[in-house]
Amino acid sequence: MIRTQEAAELVKRLGALEAPVLTVYADINPANPDNRGGGWRTRVKNALKEIEPIHERRKHAKSLYEEVLETIAEERPTARTMALFARQDEHGKSHIERIDLNVDLPVVDLRQGRVEARWGEPYVAPLVYALDEYQRAGVIHVDGAKWRFFEIFLGEIRECEEVFEELDEEDWKALREASEFIRSGRLRAEARADLSGSNKDTWKAKLQHWRHKLYKRLAHLAEKAVKALGIDRLVLMGDETETGVLYSTLPRSLREKVVARVSNPEDLNEPNKEDILERVMPALEEAERAGELALLDEIREQPGPKGMCEVLDALQFGRLEVIVLPWGLDAEVWHCPDPADWYSCKEEDARTLCGEAAGKVHLRDRLFRLADNYGTRIELVQGPAEERLRAEFDGVAGLRRW
Image (cartoon, rainbow, N blue to C red; front, side, top):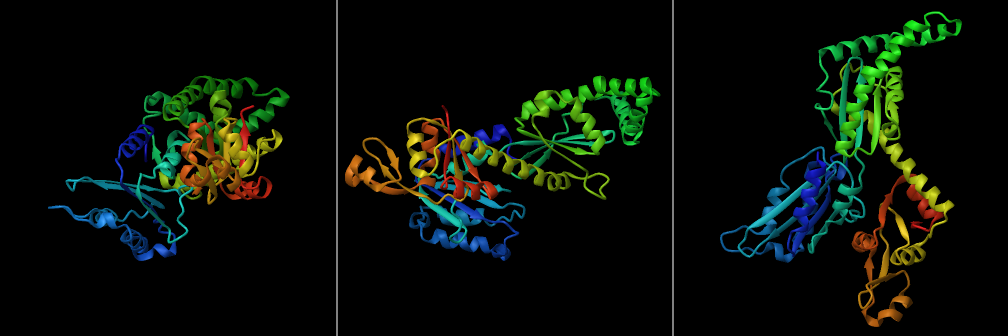
């Protein structure tokens, strides 16, 4: 898994690469039938054959093409997308960075042969977007007296064993007693008995003791981990009653991050991290889609600009907090490089501004830099939100700052 600090270091390394650089994005998903038998490598080779400079050999050195082929020879069966950056200096020394991800990348055009290869300036924007914008999720797995914390990012999962390690044997003994009591059903039964006044003090005293001493402490440790790891969303996993007690104990800052409570995988006494990932990913994806639809609701109610012309103008006047675009962005716009570095959806406007210097460009190639210039966040949406964006907002929408 790429940790927060590692992501920053990776971006720094890639940003320091001096052009010309070979950039390759490829679909290497083993679930894709076209990739069986290493079919993706053949497509990468074919794409690279057309880039003449990488085939040049310097004295006592392999060509960059040969070195890249050696790098992609390694099989990594769980990855879905490969991003590769490579350059070779005048002495034949190569720098190659291969990043394999368990997610798809936005605005990368893999439809034509499922490979995108470029020579020139490093095309790092889609990767940087993924590292910056994909939300990190946390899972608190409550299984009786065993509590575990997991971090999920870019389709990968890591168990954070250090989160609850400061608990001692007495804590775990008390937790075991609490979980047995909660799971037994006595909590619900005795709570009902409260209506007649019987057993009130016994069950209420136990529950209050566990909540204020043990569960509060566990919640505090989880809160520290969430803050340290930069967790955006939280899933509680385990017995319904136990996760319910935990949820009621969490501080408000954590409760607001909880997007789902899910049960344990069936027939698994002790699920491993892959089992847990498979169990919680649908809930996280549902939360992501719901968040995208809620953003479109906010833009509709504001109302914000819609359609390429309105959104581009509002963006370049610094009026947008968020710009919403489809994941598979394939729009072309007119660019006027001099004197204003201005983008327009209309050819006549661009020609009026800079005459013959105006030209058509792919928005996906300029989008991240353009949004960064105006301090605007990009939201690339998929599924129902993408369909709604195209049908209701002419394919692009913006949330105003004011």
